[in-house]
Length: 108
Image 1 (cartoon, rainbow, N blue to C red):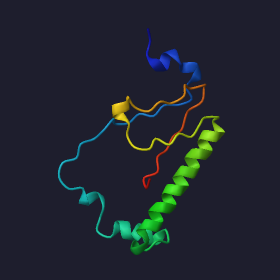
Image 2: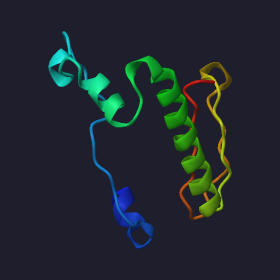
Image 3: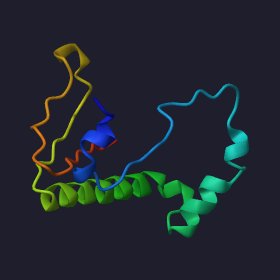
């Protein structure tokens, strides 16, 4: 038996390869120079005092995009809510040849 990619090569459009997870020890301040977040927010038209408005706007845009992609793929948009590990995890409908999309609002 071959690998998953070999078995389904005729239906695979592309693949993503990345780390499963990374562990950082210490402080990550070198990744974010002093004032970088404030500068980014300001450039996007959100002063630091309006971070909540920025976060809500970004969440709404992400959610709208996820809903549109799900509709375009003929898949339901499923809001996961809180983690349901005790219940055996989330239940998603079976795939029908399309990629399913789901998103979770960070503010709900």
